[in-house]
Image 1 (cartoon, rainbow, N blue to C red):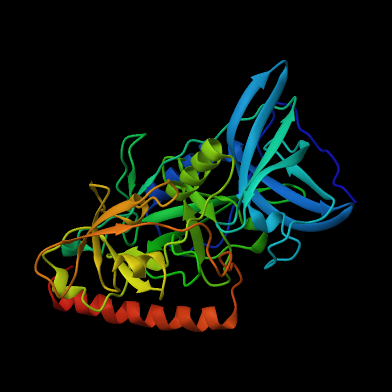
Image 2: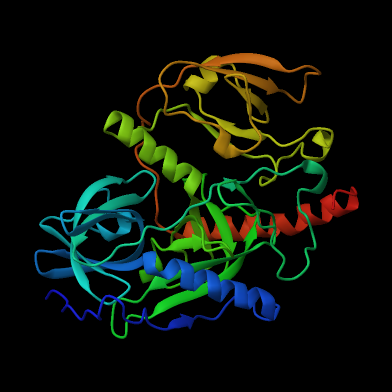
Length: 400
């Protein structure tokens, strides 16, 4: 059965914030106060969503209001959430039949949503809402995920410290920075939930290489909720894993939405290579590149792929793309038409090399997988063990 509307007056209380067990227990009180202030600032944009097939309840998720407008006495808005809400089954690439979506707002009022757009590859969905209730869109901040090799691990940081920047500029994110995640519970009393964790350089091990990782835990219904900084700005969209919190940064999300706005579709050109930030991957030639700065490294090149045809190889470091410096993974854009000019540094060469890459439409083996299978967990443990080894290597080489 569908949920009941239990709206509070428009100017009523927004409800208590329930703080879950945090991986950052023992934080300085000043940081704790900052987190609560930021949460109160952001929580009006946080909603809970429930999907149905007909009248059969299917999934719960959280979301963030990303757009709002007032037109003819009606508030209209768009909510960003995870496609887990609309998938027929957790790992399926099909949408629920006879889909109905209901959204619980900050004042407990219930509104019906409509599916506007979704991208199963990157696991994001946009839900449209409208009604008499005031909607407040969240503020967002892109991430600067680049990092100089000379202090790439940045350890140890003062407990609770996080470098804040002026609004509108990319947020610098470093190993050990405190980040928190908001959610809204789908049952009475519809608490706003908050948990926190530390940003880590370790890989999430999913097919989606753009995912970043926070050491911490959430519940399944929290998926799709916002990852927030100490200013209340949304940095990304949280996904679910039993052992940590993966999240997709706003850099990727906004590029996807911009592509959809321009072309009417989400595009995923196939290039046939895996690329990771040089500062966040366990690259075998890492220490040898101490003289280099912030770039991305090609981890793997598929045979007969566009990258392979262009002559690119694993362990190549990408310095420029279309004459623009590449200082982080998010500086690479593959959703535009035409060819890409890459300037690459190869470990066996003393000078940078030029390559022309022409992406092809569509990835032959389909969408990213979003299931935490046993193999993923084994791989994750292996890479976490590697993290400790490389951290020791950085310190031994004077790179801390």
